[in-house]
Image 1 (cartoon, rainbow, N blue to C red):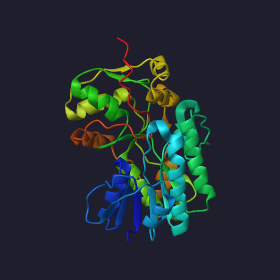
Image 2: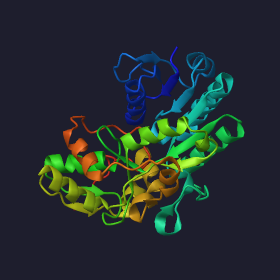
Image 3: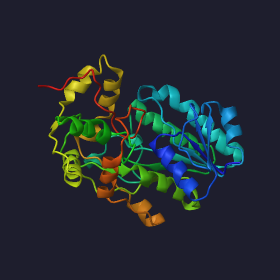
Length: 324
């Protein structure tokens, strides 16, 4: 029987499963389609994680259950509660640790954009309220649990602004239209660091009952990130321009994805700063060098991903046309 169960096979779930298997752990990956990375120690199972009974069976004997699931970005209030409840139930029934892949939505806008591990959860938007409820429900259940929170993802296979806005513009030699301020400092979290943090904290009882920030490199703006990528890879420099805030908000009247973007746009129209010093000091974890991450991005042949609910803002909907 697998001792580690990973729910979800997106970038984070796949990275966690590979990391565990490479360490010799037996891993079961649960997804609707039965997808997941190939490895002799990884078993892939097709199942609906919202089915509490089935998930409880699939996690029997597991030491850790990793919540690495993704939900359709426009349907969080509908889709997340039953999946989260099923994982909490499975952890309780099987006396397993529940390791939750988190994000920064629950904090809401913060003065100066800075967030520490102890920043209060003050979000009023619907997606932020979903994440707050998930965390509070896990804590109230009495299970051994923790949440590892990261910022906008970077790295091969990561879904985020870098892959959805910058890379397509670089590939086509066009201007990158950013739904935000290209010069605002922004924290980026490497997929590999998220996976390593989840696995490390799941084995350390000091982590349980608390939320932790994934060690991430010092913040850089989207414009700086694009320039650094071009310098490292020899790609042509790409122009990055700000998409006026009203564009997405107006489009949101008719386009559901644009409406979701508008709710979270504070993340990119001002500083968005993840402070992870407490996690780094407590567990001895460090962030991967950003140059290493960007080189990994350049070597990835994965096509531009569809949006499935990663921490930061989704790509600009095709229905929104940038101003001339």
